[in-house]
Amino acid sequence: MKQINWLDSLVSECAHVETPHSWLWWSFLSCISAAAGNNYYLTTLKGDLIYKPNLYIMLLGDSGLGKGFPINRAKLLVSKAEVTRVIAGRSSIQAIVQELSRTRTAEGKAPITDSRGFIINGELSTAIIQDPDSLTILTDLYDGNFNPEWTNLLKGDGAEKLKNPYITALFGSSPAHFYDSIPQANIEGGYIGRNLIIYEEKRSKDVDLLDENEVKEGDKFDDFITPKYVPHLNKINNTKGRLKPSDEARKLFNTWRKKWRASQTYDKTGFLNRVPDHVLKVSMCLCLSDWDFNGEISQYHIETAIEKVTSLVYASKRTTEGRGPDPLAAATKQVLDYLLAADDQKLTRKQLLWKGYGVYNSFSLDQIMENLTEMGWIRKTKVGVGANLDWEIRLAGEPLDSYQKYIRSKEKKQ
Image (tube, rainbow, N blue to C red):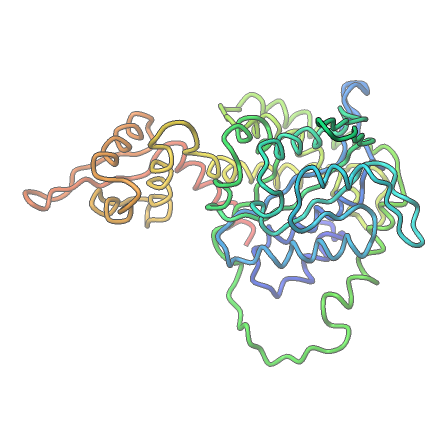
């Protein structure tokens, strides 16, 4: 049964903007994750495995689609609540670790003595100064449950110890910047597998930017979030304990997880392996999003988490396909992108040559088409005769199946 919680209410408040709905939902969910800190946990395998509700979320899409709105609103909400360290702007990973190692105090608040933090920036490429170790360290800190004490020891510097690190991250990125910011080692080394990538191709709606409505006192976002939404983040931060699934939720998750494992395919990022873990973390945040949360993860929380997380599989695959040592990798991805964007996912060879001018030549395109045909990802058909002879290239196989599932899920939500 649909439940109106803190998260849904806040997303509804922002229904007037053009930002994709999913970007609003996941950005505001990151606020719940940040406020939870080390206060809550979920145990599995008779207590041998502990989950905490920290999330790494990345909004991915072309510039101008509205990533800045939810990211800045999320930063404002968590900053006003003063429930964790908010690390925004451009930083080095060493500066972030240093900030996490310090006790933080705020007027009227208990000091923050553990290493909790909310790292947030509208552009991943500027969030962390380029450092070959930065994403590796973020990967390590994500698993704070395995690292109750994390030590950073560099030559010439004193040891910096992080106590119970708990990191929530919210980044934005465009595809072009994403490929510049994420080295191949971090794609296959676990960082991307720990991220929930929310990929969008267009705005949720088109509205008149210049309207006739007069903004009244109390109508602006900044005016009403403090009395209406910040107290819930404080409530989460001031409570603690173990979150427990109901019997129905436990049965649903276990049954679904077995089916998920049985149908799993190869994934170089590790995201598919981590989908059940992501579902549990998101369900914990959804539990805490209830206005009157009681510590029980319900069947509705699990159902919603499964729906939201599994819908990101296409985004994760599409983001990382075509990356690797193959010199044709980038050009192959570009060909697939052109086919995905085309009507009925088909183009002629001449059209692909025209679109890919400066990216690949006719010889490279023929190699790409041969590889994709062998993989079953495209089908080639001769069209025309004589001087007008050409090939029609139609997308097929796994990329088309994933894309169609993605489109159906988008239509279902609208």
